[in-house]
Image (cartoon, rainbow, N blue to C red; front, top):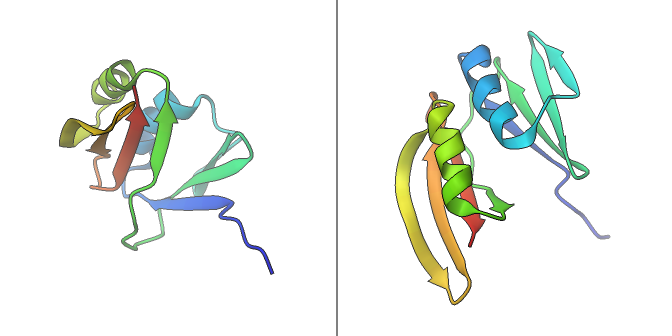
Length: 109
């Protein structure tokens, strides 16, 4: 049996604040309800769930311009967890967090 990760649920306490930041990263949500906000990211579901209270791993979003994406998210309310750093000959990463402390990893040039 082959499995593929098809969704990521992000627990949030302030749905509006989280929605502002995730919309800056992913564009307009396909579902926007008080109990669930869902984004289709090239077939991968990223959802915000205000009732969910769990910890989870850092998922890295591939971005074309790491510095521009980081700046956009910081302007939307993100908090820097780790500054951009080189992880390979052609890749840098950084980790930001939303207002609830949920990590958002960025990987790009």
